[in-house]
Length: 121
Image (cartoon, rainbow, N blue to C red):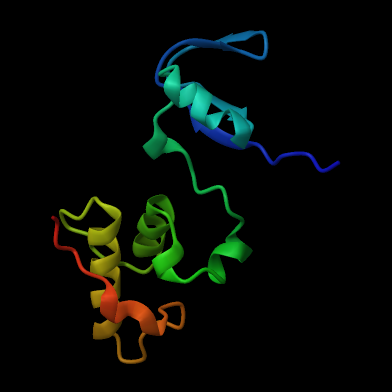
C-alpha cells in the first residue's frame, strides 16, 4: 500500500491537527485527502493549496486540461502577466495568447486552442 504524499500548507486560523494545537499562520503537513475537510472547516484556503500533481506529470498535461492553480504556476514560471484574469478560462486565454506571441509557441499547447473563448453567458 503506497503512502499519500503530504503537502505543506499555512493555517488561516488556530486549529488542532493530529492531537497537536497550532496557531494561525503555522505551516503544517497534511494529506491531500484531508484538504476538502480542512477547507470546509475554515482552517485553510483553497487558493493556498499547492497543485497536487508531481512536476513530472504536469509537464505532460496540456494547458487546456490543467486546473487553475497549475495554470497560475505555469504563467508565473513563464513570466506571463495574467493581469485581471482570475477565472480558469480567462487565465488560459491569456496564457494561450502569450504562447501565440512566442516565436516557437509552446509544445504543451494542443491544436484544439481555437475553441477556447472567454465570453460569459
